[in-house]
Every structure is written in C-alpha cells, then in structure tokens.
Image 1 (cartoon, protein in one colour):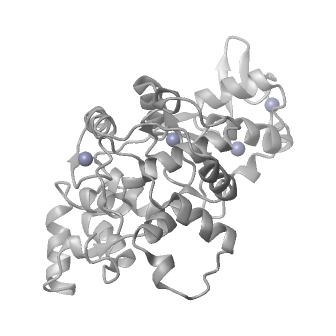
Image 2 (cartoon, rainbow, N blue to C red):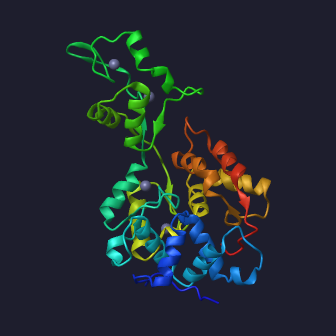
Image 3 (tube, rainbow, N blue to C red):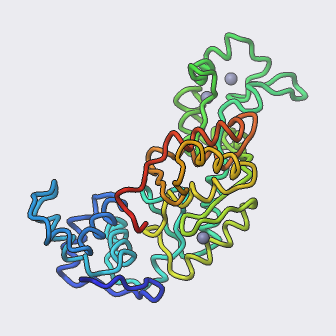
Length: 325
Ligand SMILES: [Zn+2]
Ligand SMILES: [Zn+2]
Ligand SMILES: [Zn+2]
Ligand SMILES: [Zn+2]
C-alpha cells in the first residue's frame, strides 16, 4: 500500500500542522517503539486489525498520519520536538551520523563526522573506580588519590568507603561515562571538589581490549576500530539511519570473526542441524552483554571460543516471525 521507497535520497521537509500534532503526541515514546509502530502502519496493520491495541486513538491516529513519511524524517522531527526546537531547519541542522553505541534507546545524532567519531570512541572506554590504586607515592610520601591527604592509613580509607565500591562478585565499580564516575566519586568516596573528581575520573579511564567489531547494517567483521568507523560513516553518508540498525546483524557479524567462526558453525551443525546463522535473531535488550563478550573475543576474561559460542547459543531466538529480515 505504501511502497517502500529508498531512503538514499530523502530530503528534509518541514512537517505540516497535522504532522506537528502527531509528533507532539509521540515525542515521549522511545524511538525504537516509534519505528516499530510506523512499520506496522506502513504495512496497513492498523486498518487490517480491528483489535483494540494498547494504544489510544490519538496515538494510533498519530502513527497513521506519519505512516507515509520516511522513518528518518519522522525521527528528525521527533528529535527536533524533544530538543524544543521547531521543525524548520535543514538536514544539516539535524545531522546524519548516529551513535551506534547509544543506539535507539538514547539516540544521538551528529552533523559533523569528527564529533560522531569522538562519541563512538567513548564507548570503547570504560571508567573503573580505584583503577591504579587508592594511594600514590610522591616526593612527600604516600598520598590519598581521593583527597591528596599525605600518608593515609586504613582508617582514612574507611572514611572514603572504599569497600562500598566492590561488588559481591569482587568487581570494582565501573561505568561508561566520565560524568557517572564523577558522581560516583562524590557520592561514595566523598570527593566533592569537582575538578579533583574530574581529574581522578580521567585517570581511571580504561580502554577496552577488543579484537572484533561489526556493523549493524550489513554482516561484516572488522579487526580494527578505525576501519569500522570508516565503514559506518559511508553507510550514513549513503542514507542509512539508526532505524536501519539491526542488532541481530551486529551479532551475526561478530560470530564470523576468526577464532569463533568455526566453533560457532560446529555448534550449529550439532545442535540445530539445517539452520543457518541468518535464521536466528538476537534481541538487543537481552544480548548487549553478548555483544561485548564477542567483541573482546576468546580471552582469559571472557572465556574460550566454545564458552562464547555457548553464550550466543543461549540467547538466540528462531526467526519465525520475520521471515524476510
Ligand atoms: Zn554514544
Ligand atoms: Zn583521602
Ligand atoms: Zn568507587
Ligand atoms: Zn556495513
């Protein structure tokens, strides 16, 4: 009913008054949900099904209004609305480069590819509290890394609640963003002087040792992060958006990496004879940890190739529902 037009040549147009009303109605919803319902509207789902969905009339009406627009355009309008802007800019204003690390739940878009690269790179690092120790040697003797007090003793560190930082499984607190580490340092360790907390957080940045990356637009594996960025940039410049990003494709690409590929195929042959990797799906919400493990690859921390293959096998779903995906 609505032909699936290519999004390569999409152009920014301002929404008409009805579309503005629809955007306002939908702007609180998650992007992922919006994209899914738009696809449903495009298939004529709302017309064919007389069932009362969990959606209100107003929301169904909004999806129907926007159902004949490109997803990427609708997402642009929604983001503009959320940012408090009104939809009168051009494509340059909104940008075309989406952070694949933040994904559809926290969509972030950049108009400048360097800014986008910087954002993607952030996901390659993690901040680990107390990484490098709680005291350091200086000319004046030992110094507490939290507050610079000299010659701190155990009681001093108790005041910084250092034990509150270690989880039951013995892991130190870690997070993906510097601002979260700054908050942690203030809340748990009493580092309330912000410049001190920021400097300390920067010291605790730890770059993850990964050996494989993949693409969510096509099944491809990379052994080099810069190569992956170049590849993704091209996709974006050719018109791909976050709406096209597929988590299953990410996992399928990672399973192809040398060192895992063979073990995975052997597992499939034994456990699911006749089934191909392309018949399986992995859900974003259930398999984020799996993506990380596969990126790190077979290693002391994440286990052997066989252990990784078992983890992938434990979370797949058979692709009954979307035979064309
Ligand atoms: Zn991000
Ligand atoms: Zn201290
Ligand atoms: Zn801590
Ligand atoms: Zn690709």
